[in-house]
Image 1 (cartoon, rainbow, N blue to C red):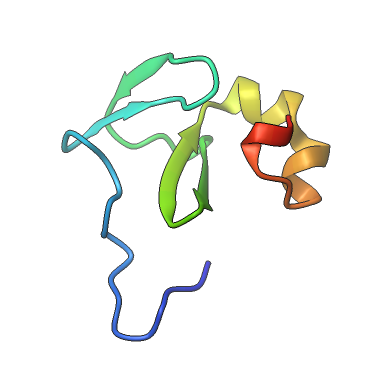
Image 2 (image 1 turned 90 degrees about the horizontal axis):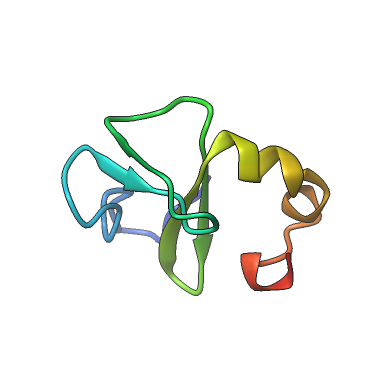
Length: 69
C-alpha cells in the first residue's frame, strides 16, 4: 500500500476507533480483523469482510473498484 508524500495512512480510516463495517454487506466487528481487506477508492478507505473479499477475489486482484463488483 502506498501513501501520498507527507500523508498519513491513518487519514480517513474508520468512523469509530476499533469499529469496522464491511462496505459491501454491512457486517460489523469490534477491533481489527487480519482477514479483512482494505481498499482505497477515490481517496476513501473502505473495509471488506473476509467473505465478501473471497467472493470478489478476481475483481480485487484486477483492481476494480467495488462499484464494479
